[in-house]
Length: 291
Ligand code: ATP
Ligand code: MG
Image 1: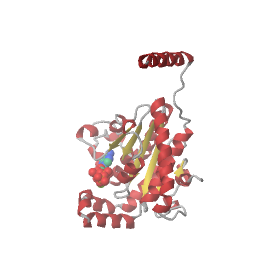
Image 2 (image 1 turned 120 degrees about the vertical axis):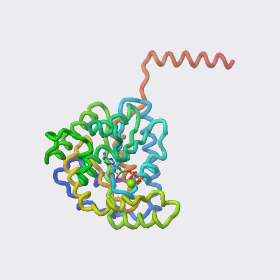
Image 3 (image 1 turned 60 degrees about the vertical axis):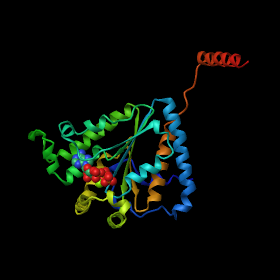
Image 4 (image 1 turned 60 degrees about the horizontal axis):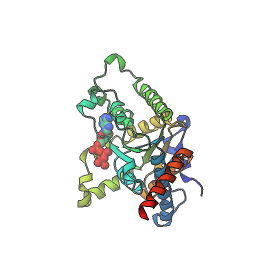
């Protein structure tokens, strides 16, 4: 089956334009029902790969999810990770930084949450907020109390450079990085916000601040585009995933992860002759107990 996710994968950002990807795209697929078995296969493959990742304990996987509000970050994580062993997976959500976090460099708080070998770490928002919300609201930068001599108009390109260097370091240390921008349209966000307001069980998800951020839509899209142009690399690609149809978002994300893991060549640890001997001895001892 053709890898649908690859058409949304950006490994070299230089030519990327956000308008190349339509939030409503479903790659010719029709509906949730029709693709349910395909999604199930993707999740099954993901589960099998995770078992190997965990058993082998050499690679780690870092999944970064970025999006505007109501694009479906939470539900994508919930669905795509539903089949994996919880022992091998940690989700970290990054909200507005605390005073302690603000007192450190901008990579500090996420670094402490990186996955160890054998694990999948999911970042629900990440250090990329530092070139998104902070760029759209430069007053947030003031709160970081950087020495003024270090803050110039080049700060965003310097941050891109630092992020690229950091991700290259992670990759060289055995952390495979997949980055997803769930690309929702402004109209779909409006509909989802209205649904959150009109459905009592969803009221808790709605914050007035979300509507304020919506007013900066164009600035956010420009920041996302520039971010992807500067930080999409072969070792840490971005997937710009159409997010107006949640079933399609899940399918693309699940297949992207499963496929990437397959390419890591994960396998269960092989045992050597000495270990095989130990197993044979253990088997014999256990059999003797039973007789
Ligand atoms: P949900 O609203 O679905 O619960 P969320 O991820 O939107 O999930 P919020 O409680 O709304 O969670 O908090 C996220 C807010 O924190 C976002 O507006 C985001 O831009 C902001 N934020 C995240 N990281 C930073 C950062 N480094 N600096 C400033 N603001 C940040
Ligand atoms: Mg929010």
